[in-house]
Length: 147
Image (cartoon, rainbow, N blue to C red; front, top):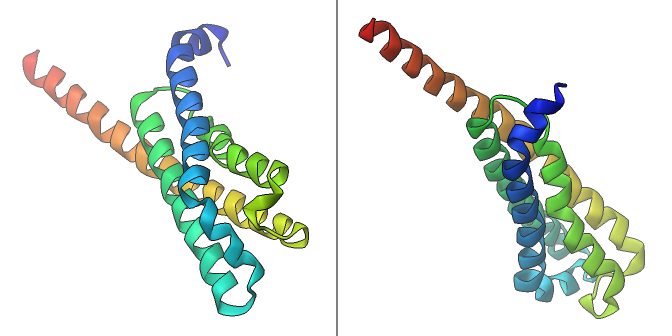
């Protein structure tokens, strides 16, 4: 990878990385009261896992789609953003035992959140690349019409 391309995209990389970390912290703040349901077992635990999978999957999809639609290079960087999205919530769960997640179930919850985030990132990258290619095609057709 050309270091000039990374330097050229550094402000965008920093903005999206800080957005991902901040959003991960905000998700924890607004949903920390639901972590207690992980300990209930059965369908309630499954629905809690599903809820967090939907939230992290959708947020990482949105971030990856927008990032790849706006940049010409670094198509795989949104995977880092997906990890950064989940990281604050994981850290808060580990260091705040009052969150209510039993230690035995923390790895399962972490896996669910991380897997959902990476799956959402995968589909967001695909959609972002389609959007970007469509925009570039429109620009090329417009340039062809002008000449």
